[in-house]
Length: 349
Ligand code: F2R
Ligand code: MG
Ligand code: MG
Image (cartoon, rainbow, N blue to C red; front, side, top):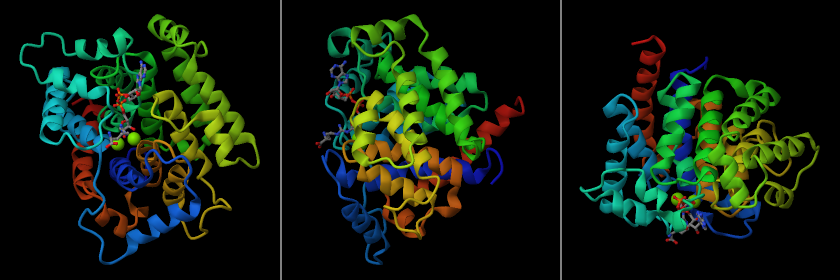
């Protein structure tokens, strides 16, 4: 499809849901043989499956809150979004939330709260969370705002409702930028895509709060930029093993150890790979590869799925996968409404 086409919007939202649903199987696994991944994915074609047998987790539960809030308020409203997170958690607490963020979600449901960002600031002795919970749910921000500076501003604020550490919210900004650029067709030129992400993150990580957090956590001066440079080195190699990817970029629950990894999965799978079935298209390759990394598979596949889906569009998504994954059909419908909001804004309406 063309730039910011409806197909790309649908692909992004549905891709995220699929990644979450199919990735749940291996979350927390240390080693995941590709054989097991392919067996899992081939099993989705089974006629007896369908009707959402694979349930979504916190990644999608929170992304749905983001979508509903952005649509209802026709933009970012922190009070409304916070309320939706809290309500969703209280209605379905068993979706596999991070152990820290649960505290925030409980506090956000209090009616006496004067500052919705305060519970997040109180996390981890005042340091805030650096988990990938802000990034895993950020895709709708990339789809709601045509202006890149708005995507940056609001994805950051949206993440700060639960993640006040810059290593948490900057991961969300990076993921939102990747989805947004992919939506514009930027993955047609992978090297330029990565250059653009780096130049944007150089600016983002130049802020004082980011520099302070990086220093306190003994990370590189600009941690996400450093990972993106490593990613570029990996892309330039003719062969890269799963172990090298995990070692250089990570596969963990921290945003720093998962957002650049998800971006790498997408870039690596733009072309056919020896370890993956030749009949697989790019989106299937991205999913399979994300799962084979092990670790935080639902979240890495969810983030990679959003970027890849925005690139390839909805047409390439296997119907059997759509049927198996809870919430996939609904994501396709709501993507249409985000598409309308985006183009309304783009026309200055
Ligand atoms: N939580 C999971 N999966 C594991 C458990 C699943 C479930 N409970 C079960 O077994 O049934 N998955 C989901 O969590 C990730 C997103 O987490 P989020 O929203 O960022 O949560 P949190 O609690 O803020 O951070 C996650 C963990 O990271 C560590 N951490 C974060 N900041 C820290 C800091 N400043 N200092 C020390 N540690 C910090 C903590 O261990 C947090 O618990 C996604 O994978 C999603 O799928
Ligand atoms: Mg999850
Ligand atoms: Mg996860």
